[in-house]
Length: 402
Image (cartoon, rainbow, N blue to C red; front, side):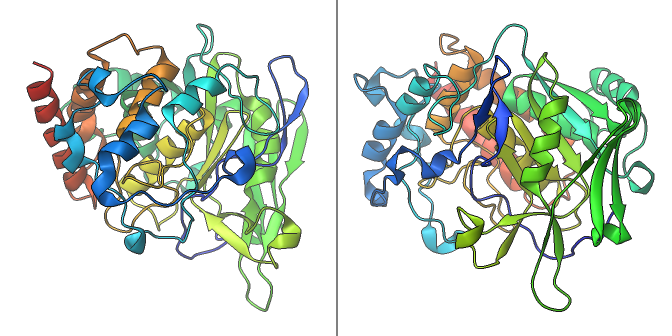
């Protein structure tokens, strides 16, 4: 693994990059952080004793009430499993922006992707997979063995008993398929002739070489001021390259790298006072995400959760700041919440075209239970707590759906 930096890292606290991508017709479009769009509306944090009203405003369409929703989406009995977020315990000091409601998410699909971030890409019959492009340094990966073809084959033949014996990437793919409801294809840079190269551990340069196309893409570096300041790869420069490798059959592409990732802290370089924020993962509006994959600072729960978090951003889901949820802007040390608040579950159903499927949510949770100990080791921090949450949720859903 490269040694660009060695310090605690956090999940990205913003949604999309301000970079130029291409729309469906190949035209250039400027992507913008959707959390700073929509007039930067602010709203007081709802009181914890008004959970029902807060949930109604986020979960329902204008003409709906919670009582109209199928029990798989909402029941008052689920309240204890979706507690409001305690701001004092939150890692990071994000403000309580008015978070994206289900109604707003539905409306986004009616608009083309745009510079304001008020439109989004939709799923299509020809574009229903997620690509995992592994650009980590192959020869230095102690726990990653085998080719992409072997890894995909091993996942398909898994018996469902015990943690997968092959590499972390296969376990990540298995988790994402169960969590997001889309098939996942593992791609390796080595097989595709794409190589991540660093000079002097990244302190003097970092680039992505494409041997088959005869191209080399230099990546921007961010350096902390002062002697001994750390160095990071600018995540936005990665997006400019990665978008070129998004296949027509893929809805999203997740790039796995083993370099420290960073961005300027602030909406613009001029506003950041030279401060750099290190991130574990980041997503952009062109359906591309990147994760610092082999960092020793993140366990499987944190890393796999961040991968799903960033991919959900590519699907149009914004951050959640009221409930404990995978879509919280930052992860919580030792107690990462791996599951979605009800309004985000409904957004996922809408995205997948499953809103009329009254068994979708329960089947999804049952599949996650089935795959949980195939993906995670019981000794992994947070794995047992999240599994117990999952088991309770399934029991309550079975009770209320009868």
